Image (cartoon, rainbow, N blue to C red; front, side):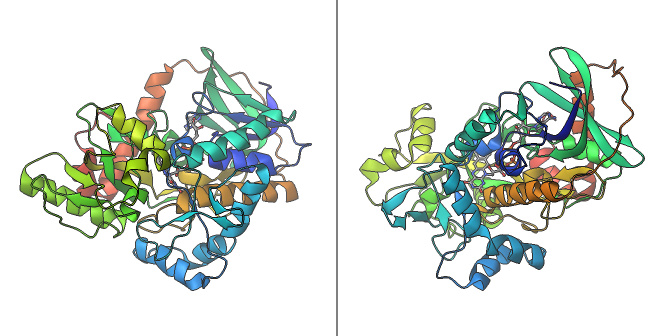
Length: 436
Ligand SMILES: Cc1cc2nc3c(=O)[nH]c(=O)nc-3n(C[C@H](O)[C@H](O)[C@H](O)COP(=O)(O)OP(=O)(O)OC[C@H]3O[C@@H](n4cnc5c(N)ncnc54)[C@H](O)[C@@H]3O)c2cc1C
């Protein structure tokens, strides 16, 4: 790790990787991650990445996205991203991602909740891992990119109202990294919840840091609860039971075996219905029945990730029902950013889940987030190729004395308090009893 780079990217998920790969190979780049590069939520994405169908009217996809977002989306942003969604898939294919096919000329597309058509490209049920492994391999092969793992970003360096670098904690030391552009690709906030599908290390401190410097943020109170997380009494990261299972015919049943909701309604609607059902039945889970799914005996081949996660808990999805409950999954809000990552602070860029571009509105349509992460990552890279800020930083030694865990805990508290203030109902319902 050097002291000065052209660009520093914080985050090794789909957003950070796709940005890094777009950047000119003559830029000096540093890409950091809090833990290993693979400990990013992008690697956990099962369902896939959504794209406009070649023959479909773009307005249909736009309408599905707006409907899921309760029409609070930015329509221009929605149109811009969805219009180029197929290009993103082609770019990924060009990198070497092998999305599943039915035959050499036809992709196998999934249908997910809120989509009127099957638009979701996937690689088995480990799409995110496939995409990121392919991209990470290319990033690691670039001599102009230093990848720094186990490096915690804990502050921005701001001079003359411009971002000129970041402060990090690595190998027990506090360091400054100066850069002409700082790209935050730090993902969501699930780590502040006890029951979440997210990695604990992806916990949203970048948002609090941005707020500390008055960078514009929006919709922080819009947090998606996934309807079907594998029920587990233990706290910590909970396995996601992909929506694609409901898309293929899986149905939700109360503990008494009664069906209570159309399973393919948007996530927020289904989550609330499950919560209500659990309250009525005085229980802490419902069941996902896979009885109606075609080729059920071969379901382990089509959904190996879910199969393994359930098997680890003694549930054989080829014959058993899956106990599920809602859990925190995705953050629609974030650092206000243009689709090329520009924020209200010169020199600072935000892409992927940590940003809020306006694509999702109040609620994200399934599989639109990998799309947004890759699209905005790529656009951010292109934008920085076209013009890289040229701020001169005044370099100085990092004299931080506080404990890193305390610094991060303070940021989490600010985030929780902000959510509580902006959406008290959400706080009471889903966050109050968490150990944030
Ligand atoms: C279980 C699961 C399944 C999903 N399935 C799908 C799906 O099928 N389709 C879809 O579109 N979306 C899906 N999503 C959502 C999607 O995966 C994420 O929204 C998206 O991958 C976010 O990408 P990202 O690059 O913005 O962030 P992430 O991939 O989460 O990466 C965040 C990075 O930031 C780093 N970081 C964070 N804070 C710091 C810090 N302080 N210092 C240093 N580094 C830091 C982390 O180490 C990590 O490298 C799923 C999410 C989960 C959890």
